[in-house]
Image (cartoon, rainbow, N blue to C red; front, side, top):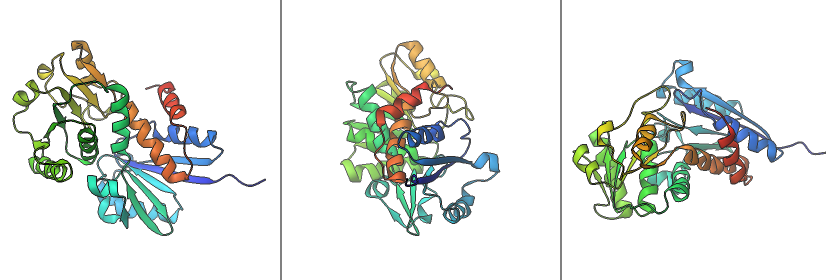
Length: 284
């Protein structure tokens, strides 16, 4: 009787103790007959920051890790440490999945696909002329690519770092055409004319409670999407739902980025519906 394939994977990020990703991967690994171990590498718990990435990658290679997922705040900082990038990761400028194979570190981005799948499932028929996106970091870059691919006509990007918002808008316009994306400068005015609002900042996570926009700027005509999923109902979503807005939580993105990452790590096509059902069965 042959031994099952062994997969050792992990997630590098800050404040990730509530992540459902380990259980999601390990449960599907069990269903596929794999020996699948998935570990959290929490920078906060280890009292580390992104400067530790070179050491963490080297340690993972030495311990024969199959691959790593990368989350806030490391999705862009990881790039200079990699040997290759997939076309998606190169175009987006952010990495959330690193495959360690044959002595090489290969970066991928499955966030874009993950958000797009969730958007199609949850907000397929919404108006998408003007959309406001909060955040221009690694996750924001992937979500912005997904939104424009899904037909958003103009995306206004707001970030605490205006240069980062400008840089992302320029990148998007090179891919999607002139003025499809702009760096926002007047949030109240822009949001008052928008069809939708998407939060790609970590604001709303258990470790960073609060809202990325003032509650008084919300109105029932807006649709509101979130990428934070622990907790699944953020303060932003709770307030939006109270007003009657259509909403999309971060669960689908979390699941569908994991579906592709599972395949990249294991070489086995997972059962996406089974992973979604398992995610929805988890508490928290």
